[in-house]
Image (cartoon, rainbow, N blue to C red; front, top):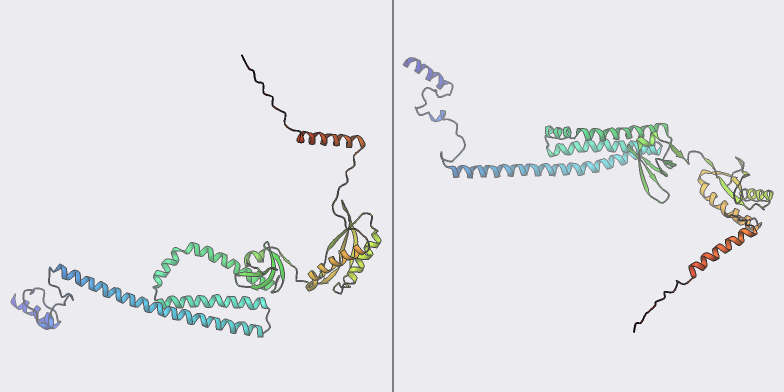
Length: 351
């Protein structure tokens, strides 16, 4: 009824709505339908395309501006964070050294702090780039298998480094042989140990295999024994030779009195009588004494006319055997030097 329509219209006007049962009537200005935001008339396709293109350009410009600002922020965070990490690590290393900690432990703690701080810096850079965590999680999820394998190996190396620091089979400065390499321990980091060879090459060995494998430490003990083998001729006086070898070692200032020097006939070799010469020296003097003793022993044996033979073999032939061998070699030589047989050509002439 008209009364019901009037009541419905009045109620809609009070709520700020235009009644749906009267769409043909003009709306008041204050109750106008919301505009779509387009200035194009209905059916104007060219205008719509132009408007869409302008909107896309504006959106791209806004996105580029946002990305540029994010990259600039990330670069600032990266540079400042890197400088801060360097300062923090320097202060940490200085503080640990003031406490007179072991150098290997200082390097390990400093390396561990470096890893932690760099992870924090990475998170800060990602946050400055305003990368959505959902997208980042999706990428990490896709790479979860490879990341898991890599992290597993890194964790084993991390534990290996911790075991090396606790058990201390090696310390910085030790000369070791392990994993097929030899060199001086330069640094023990979180995941690997750095060796420096005698010819100044750097070798990086993972801590995991290093902690579970065999290690030969040449620097662990303060004293080492030099093992030398000296061969002399069979006609040499053994007592005189032993006295000369003993005197040469005793005259060297680096040879220790205790443990005592040991010089003995060790072996009757194919071409020589072999003596073992085993003096003890301080570990730091090992190689210099090793070279000095070899030089001094050679001079002393030469001065006493005691020969140092080289490998040789004596061959004995009876008379008939010697004649047979000589005839055989003469026949072979004659066959090699003989000229090739001449070729004869016969020409027949028919009249």
